View 1 (cartoon, rainbow, N blue to C red):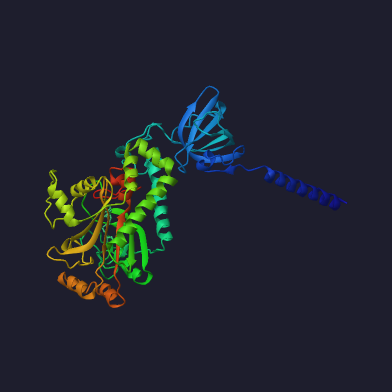
View 2: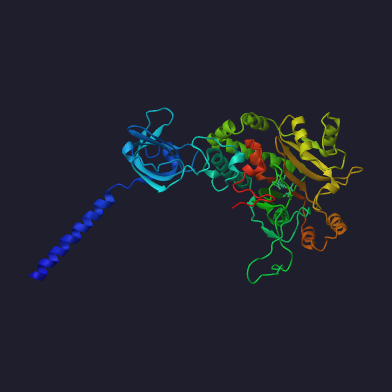
Length: 481
Ligand code: 4AD
């Protein structure tokens, strides 16, 4: 009998356990939303949970107002809580998790607000030591001192979202046009540009002391993926890459980095430079229009608060077809101008930033293509125009307002004899025997270009210093973090 009673009791307690479990799971768990979803009204009337960092905290007599941002969009979500939920640790910069009902806001400044029933402090922030001040828009030069924290600020977080959207836009452009993306190597044994601005890669650490030949040949961080793209374009026709590129340039300029992102395209079966300028112009327009449309709130805020007046410049850039001038015409324009340049403007001299900026202004402050540079100014791969007496190469740069050179490209020398002769002249025919092979086995006219992605962002946003167009800038004498 005892046994039967014990069995009944145990069945009853199991049933109670199951019921309590069901009750527990039937209680609606608040939906976790990103701030971008909440401010656009997703989950209106429901209990939701958001997580983020306090952008402002305003305790009042009966209510506490917080603004919480999680980086998903420019806007912060207004949190309204009874002052009983106030806590001295709810300061600017603190990380919080807020649960409550998402309601229509009675104020027109924001469409919705979160009526909080629970605020959990996830990470405190000592606002006395925190380098940013509430509601202050610090300038980019100040922010640069805090590469580990500047993503928490309004303007820099806008820039990072725009950067992400522009990256997606560029990938979409190439996908739509039938290009295949190629991951070109970061470590390489060639110096594509031949300018000697290489970072050498050597092992370090136990077991490798003094071993400078891990790869058996000198190896470097890539200065350009072009030669590898050329290899693949010889089988895929239209290819592109978008990745980090490295140059040991001892420059503190506002447009040079030691590590930058380059978009490179290579097209086989080209007829002329026009095939390339068309891709460059199309890609520039398509990416810019996409960013202006899909990142409008961030771009508008950036243009308003960081670079007032820049939107008009961007609009003007998109209105007209980009003009094309030859290098010789550019030299004529510079020599006819009354401007005093610091660098010479004789035929044969490389164009300097001051010249590029002047040419852009001269053409109406819109992007301009300069073609057909002196043959010996360009690397060994540039196609010889075989013109006399000037002797130029089929190379093209795209110059843009505020920046100067944004893209550099050329038709490649596809003729075996001419390429071999040029490589022999500089003693590189053995090093590049594989490159000559490409001309031996099914060579076709081809060409391509590279676009500096940070310079592109500088151009469309009006960012003065390239160090503010990349999350973690690397340049000579600086490698923070
Ligand atoms: O003109 P560049 O040197 O061209 C090449 O490397 C070609 N191999 C590309 C190709 O044809 N596939 O570099 C291309 C672009 C420049 O126009 C400039 O925008 C950017 O890369 N760039 C830099 N950006 C930031 N910091 C630097 N140090 C840069 N050097 C070049």
